Amino acid sequence: MAKWGEGDPRWIVEERPDATNVNNWHWTEKNASYWSKDKLAELLTNIEVSDSRGTCKIVEMTSCEGEASANNRKAKLIFFYEWVIELKWQGEPDDSDETIEGKVEIPNLSEEHDPSDVDVTVTVSSKGDKAEALKELMRNKGTKIIRERLEAYISALKKEFSQGMILPTKSDSINQVKSTGKTTVNYKQSPLNGSSGDKAPSLVKVDTTSITQAETFKCTAEEFYRALTVQEMVQAFSQSSCVVEAQNGGRFELFGGNVSGSFVELIPDKKIRMRWRFGSWPQGHYSDVTIDIEQKADCTEVTLTQEGVPQGEADRTRDGWQRHYWDSMKRTFGFGAILF
Image 1 (spheres, rainbow, N blue to C red):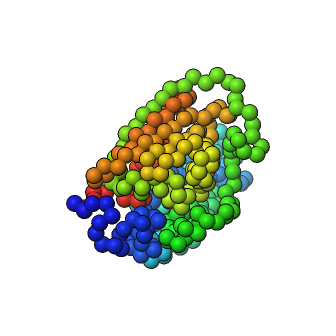
Image 2 (cartoon, rainbow, N blue to C red):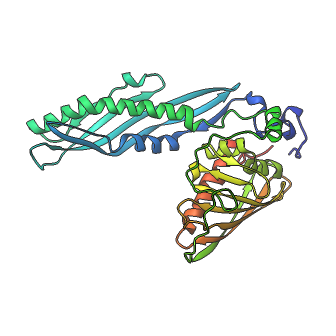
């Protein structure tokens, strides 16, 4: 097994700010399947249409089979997706309280078809004139909106999900450190304590608990530290725009403002201490997070200690670290791969 820093010089970490892909040259793939299922459910449920015949509404995505991925080759993004989708709709005739149900089937959503050409089949489970009238209402008006939402999904896959896939070169990283820069993030949360426009911490008593996690990553301590402190790398694994001011007292904001806080102490490749909160926590309440980083012979061991987590939020917080930080970092940067 090669030691850190040895081997082909094209793969030496110091020449790769993204720690995995020199100048975006090699083919990298990012699984978009889980994200796509959530996005399609968000876009396709609660579609409602009405006219003189009555009202129809899509109430559930009952099935979504397929896969999607985003790929980077030589700084060019390529997308693959193929889905078979089934939706459940309900309707009420204008002159009756009767509930009529049916299905919408989308058998061929893929990169090979324009959204306007995707098949959308509407069926109804009941019989009679009123049922047929509502089926035609959903077919005529609902189909148009469904195709618009499918187009919105494709647009989000290309613009939202793929953010951060084309990673900075070494020169880009150096320029970012030297430049003051500007940000276009739209903040959803109140300013953090210590910044302009602060609000006083909440005086509401919050019962808290602590959580601890230990995780192993197949990377160097330097690579792991950079993944949490270099904005482009945080953006890559969080799959969204973010703010990362990696200095003592600097603030951070991830996942559309759902996670925010400030850095308390930064010891490169050794330790990260933060004041950290979920957006849903009581106003002004922060937890204290310490991430200890220890370089081993063939991996990096990380221990997270978080104190001040509101009672009832521990499981959600623990799951958030695992899924949205550790697992996502391993998928995005290959930190879960075996090193040879």
